[in-house]
Amino acid sequence: MMSRLLKVLTLLLAVALVAAACGNDDDGGGAASGCGYATEGDARGVDKENGVVTIGTSQPFTGRAAVAGEGLLGGVQMAVDEVNANGGIDGCTFELAWEDDRFEIEQMVTNVRKMIEQDNVWAFVGTAGSQAIPSTYPDIEAAGTPLWGPVSPADQDIQEVYLTNPTRTEQGRICIDYFAEQGVTKVAAIGQDNELGEEAFSAIDIQAPVHDMEIVAKEEVEVLSDVVGPAVLAVIDSGAEAVLTALDNAQNGLVLDQFHEAGFDAWVCSDAGSSGAGGLNTVGLANPEAADGYLGALQVALPDGDDPFVVAWSALWDAYTGPGKDGGAPNFSLQTYSISTAFFELFDRLDGDYSYENFHATAESLAGDPILVPSIPPVACGPLPGGHSCASGAGIASYNAATESWTQVRPFQAPAS
Image (cartoon, rainbow, N blue to C red; front, side):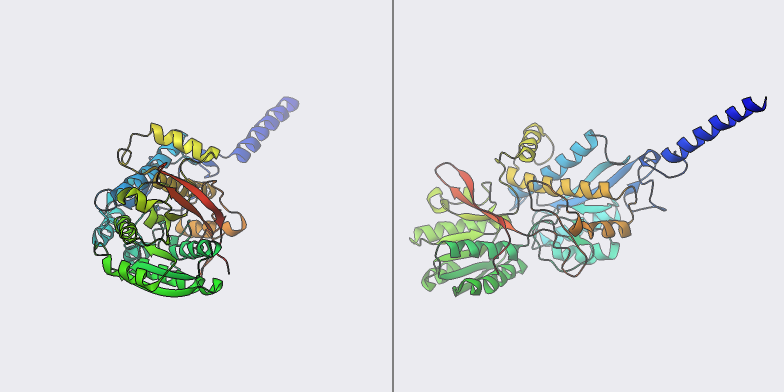
């Protein structure tokens, strides 16, 4: 009898040990415990009962920048759909709340407030509009809601904001490096009268002296204005051999046309958002002869690249039928798809603890273990100050009007110093 009892006890002990090692639904250990299994209490935007995490994005889906905004929204939505189709992450699926800001500052602020207060988003992903994003920072900071991968604002060392692409200042510096490689000695800049323009002027002030270039003109254009003629004439009169621009796509198209009409043959390079490198956002608004040879910085690989990651994205984009597909630009879709892919990798590293404290701790540890997405530079965030500029280096692409295509002419690399 004793022998039989010992066998039963031994069997029960073995079962208990296995259960302890594997975890169960009651002890909070392992993904089997459900979405947010390691999160203490309630977390904004995390519905533990239904296993859904809500994230948000604001895009210029209509208005002046609609072609970019549609593609940007499409890229985020594609990434969400893909993760959900693959079963989600640690018991969580994702819902995307989005709003159209029409490329207007006040509307973006309204959108962000609405998504925080009503949609209860856990984080923002891939929001675009560098001239408007800083206006949302007070609300983002007050709510503590992370903003992952905003498209091209300056780094203002805010705890909640993580830049996954090089800043416009860095892209401008890399444009100037390319000018130097072409033998340019006199350089000018045309920028909007806002933070976007300030970044271009900062880029030229920093980088021109590195190459002993003379800065011969720095001209401003009003935001959303089509009056670019005075700036164009001032740059022509300056004798510049190359021009860095920081304008919206429509303004850049006008500048290219007016340079061409005046017979002004100079290198022109813009940051990725201004140029729409890889798509027709700017060059499609200019005469083909004027757009030929136009240069754009690359934050992300060209959408016709042969890297397996880009090829896989392309297949998804071809099959995608959601918002943004009808008029969206593929280059911008690839950008936010890449940003979102990095976000979901970071989410996976949180191991079920969706507190913002854990989010920041994990994100700020990426310098030692970067997120690698083949279409963008390594995402290697670190602590503040400075560590939330998570990626360094940009490429340069050139537009060929005859083939209506872009070719990368300079690899991804950090600016010269």
